[in-house]
Image 1 (tube, helix red, strand yellow):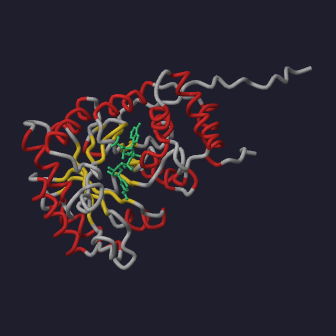
Image 2: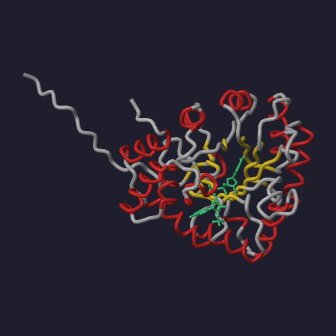
Image 3: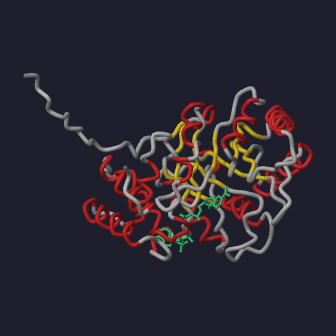
Length: 309
Ligand SMILES: NC(=O)c1ccc[n+]([C@@H]2O[C@H](COP(=O)([O-])OP(=O)(O)OC[C@H]3O[C@@H](n4cnc5c(N)ncnc54)[C@H](OP(=O)(O)O)[C@@H]3O)[C@@H](O)[C@H]2O)c1
């Protein structure tokens, strides 16, 4: 009789530590820093950005609209704040991949017309006091601009040396494909919301397209805007699983949640948004966590509240 033993999967740890490839921009840390909440004093902003970069969080994600909330005062305020950080810390700008976004006129409308995007990008460059934005992204899809026009705007910005690579945020898969098809060198990134409480990109094709087309996902609000840390409005069974893994790995629940984001084979960058330097140290430990398939499928099931078939 043949040996009918079911093979035992090794259940080896998933990769959460390797640097992420960003096309011509080289590599960035798997955990990186967002500037949405960069509304503190200049000294606080210097501390948070410098600490992040020293910890290997080498992509900084900004947007022209950041500064309108979280204690900010106006459109453009977080880009201006980051520009002052660059002015104060010599050499910092050259150690990072600088990302920003345009295309939202506060609230609505969204505007990705070529004229608007080019002007918005020029204004972002002035506010951050830099010559080039490494990664320029459309913040939200403008359904009333043809993707070919957006591609032409990106090409113009690139030809003028104002941007190096381009990306999108909050785009559907068909929107991403349509724009990508008009670009000679393709999109470098796609920035969806993704966390242990928000799994859509794993299921709506976003991450599959990223893997197929060599687009790097940048996961926004990887701690669900802090809810995973505080536990507010998060399924208790998800908190239980994250806490068990945190105890096993000797890190915080937040570090486990970030490691979960990093474990997907699309190799997302987790764009964290804390304004507290001590939390950056805690989150950086996500890259040394050992998560197996058993662990990540426990998180998925606890997140959705239904067992997988
Ligand atoms: N493309 C888009 O449409 C879009 C939308 C939203 C965000 N983003 C990007 O994603 C970045 C991150 O978003 P996010 O700020 O919502 O990310 P997040 O890392 O999920 O949340 C950060 C928030 O959680 C709070 N928090 C509470 N306890 C924490 C803990 N133990 N550890 C860490 N944080 C804790 C932080 O407060 P403290 O400051 O007190 O630590 C902060 O307010 C933004 O800066 C932006 O670059 C993009």
